[in-house]
Length: 419
Ligand code: HEC
Image (cartoon, rainbow, N blue to C red; front, top):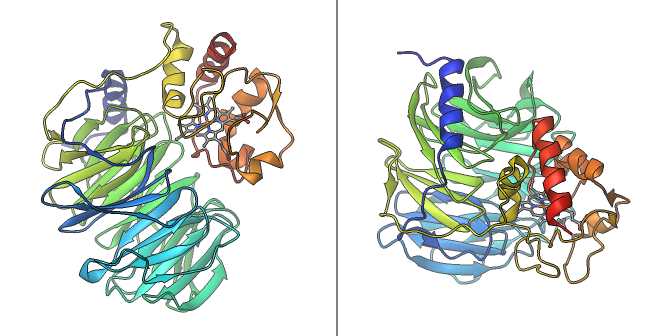
């Protein structure tokens, strides 16, 4: 049976209506804040977080084999290399290659002017491609000597994937899809219908997720193959094997689809709020997000692995639609005065306050340079356009509240709850 967009939309709504499922006893917990990047190999899982930690998890015991600290700020991208080595990229613009057992990185690039936004490793493990928020694309040897660099996109490189041929594909915030050869000379280009948020290779095809909630497959030349509308909310994470494509929406709903036809295989309501990162092996889907825990699901049917136990979701809820929309924010923002213990600053007293002005929170320099006063209107605009566009350089992950009525409900709630 083919599942059309309408049925998928129904599935999306159903998932959205499920209560947040309880957290599993055997979730992988080690990050003191949201998980922003994941990569899986046959025997290990690698995670990067907003807390600056990189954690290498043992595939058998599900315990943290190593916790590494190098990056300043968010670890934005991770990927595995052959022989248990791996590579990480950060908000600090640095890229590091780690050996299986070394505590210190084997190679690391200098601090950069722009955060790393995407990483990909060539099929033979000999090359590492790095995309940056400022649109640059660079290729390196596995010892991080630079091979080539180019201004690939006008705006963030939002996804990178090596093909089996050794060519590289990138998608960017300029709505372009480009295939590059080993010297980063463009081989094929195509326009994209919407803002891409991520890219993964599924066999010889490329799966791209979009801010408007669609997942689309492309050929290596950028020809559009099957596409599926999945969610009213932006899709923010993707992972793929030759058989399965998994995509997550900002509300934490996850879909597993057949990689050839995008036929629906299983839906997962991960619980615990937005999912920012996914990784796939043949039998396990890993999902990490704002809750800081990494949850595991069976690729066969989407069932949670590890048993369940109740974890109360902290929050402020007055039963309104706005409180519901705010749940996605509460994981990173307290409403208590001076409580900056989450990834973002307290939003207490947010209205009529200049941006990045609250005491006691280390705002990014990019935010401090902006000239915005927060009002119901400017906060609504922030989530109409998304932090990347409205507050460029912000560490707040890009997310939008697409529905104008939801934005209105959100700011009305904030007006009540932030006083
Ligand atoms: C995953 C964490 C995360 C989520 C989810 C998140 N934020 Fe943020 N937010 C941040 C961070 C981090 C900053 C500070 C950014 C910086 O310093 O660059 C921030 C900054 C802000 C600011 C600017 C604060 C100031 O004092 O200038 C506002 C307003 C804001 N967020 C509102 C929201 C709302 C509303 C939501 C939900 C729709 C939300 N955020 C969801 C992490 C998050």
